[in-house]
Length: 425
Image (tube, rainbow, N blue to C red; front, top):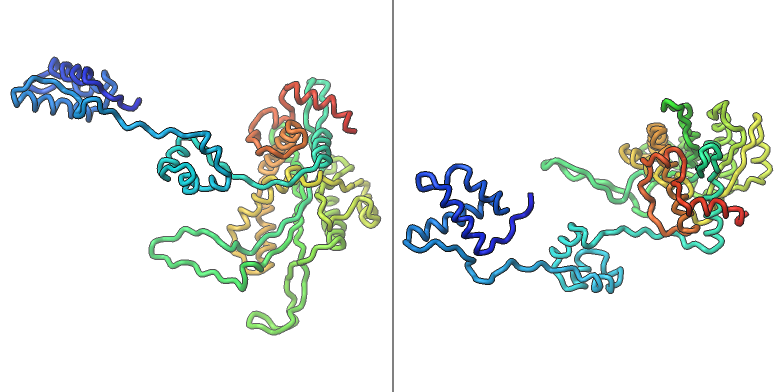
């Protein structure tokens, strides 16, 4: 329904004449007021007020004539947004509604209405890595190498990526320093304690997975989950306590992760998990994609090479582009999905963290994992559009049919980039 319009004096008197023409026993007939409201695009409340004023004039013996109480009075004009004034303020002075209102000399309620109507938009800005020219070139090359030309369909498509295992590390905490709970009115506030908020117990996990494989009917043939491995060690307790005697073996997180620790995790945990879970119909040439963190080992490591060529496999380590967390699916929502489920479990020790994270990892469906790979494809499209830059937000393209099929939009820009990719090699 349209909002009621301001009535002129002429419209007010037309409404009264309409009601007088539809009288029954000295009163407007049933439904006449509703018809008048619809006819003159106003509210029934306004019609009732006008009829009451006309009836009062008639009872006083006056000529029926309705006019505004204040001739020439109009509704107060709404305050318009001064776009240039808002844009002239520094970003730090536009971080909250209160600061913005002070900066443009308006009330907080006025600014709040502008935000609700979309005249001013709220934006959360996340700081991103500073990219050099070589970084942008490597990012662009990385995205182009993920493409292939389908001669049958005459279309540029993404490769299936089913032989690339994404590996990354993350700290999982026993609890958050600040958390929100919803309680009943008579329930007491929870009391949580910790020796220091700066040293909350945490465990680092190495997460590894690849793209899941589905049949044409949608059945999951391989869930893509290689494993999530905690970097922990068993150490004897040094002294007695009320919880256990000295010498009891305890689970402790490895605080300093070195190359030797990562090499041991790769050789003793990651590679055996690949040999055990890899599909017999999958490619024996497998790439382990990792970032450029210092503790990571290189593909040329002799011990790793010896272990990576067992059982007929050829497993190689590749590096993702520097300063590019948007090219690893762990950082595109997979870690966040694991953590959201892990925080539903109460943890009191390192063993509890390990159990909660492993249970959360197992609970996530392969379809959720496949959506993260669609996000990776969306990021690669944006990287190509931006010529390697990271000045973009991840678009919502996960449900797009072309992205599900791995096909890029038939846009000359993408084809032009594809055919010029030979210049980067």
